[in-house]
Image (cartoon, rainbow, N blue to C red):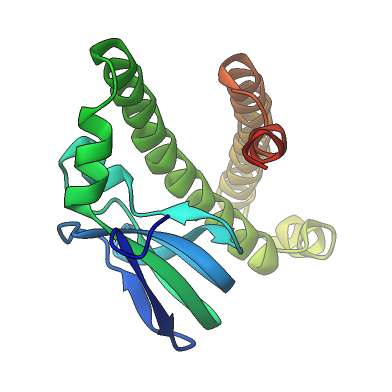
Length: 196
């Protein structure tokens, strides 16, 4: 990329490179270091993925004409190459209409998958927290035996519902895995290999 179309900047550890919800003026290539992609889900940041040298980010807002869909934060000191929206849009305008249409479809799919991924990551975090605080049912069983009959039956019902919920989550996880396989594009590693 020529210097007229881009510039390079150094970003310190922990600094925000791209902020979710803001309008885009630049897209980026990570020249060195690592960065975290964070999406705000239910008012808390959820790690979507980690970027490394050579990764491109920030272009979705250009293509979609929408605010940033996630934040990107430096994970250690990094160096980024920035290219302007004008340069990006000029290059995009050179493409045939059918290719731009395909890019819009790709962008739409990516936006949906980013949202789904963020929500699933947040739910997974909740499940892990729940696992850490789960009651040891074997030791609790002795206490349940001592309870009055009404409470005993209620506790047993709660345990059965918990077991059913865990079983349901297991089934949903398998269905999610199958759904992802059905829409899985070519792998990122093969796409990177083609770029080189």
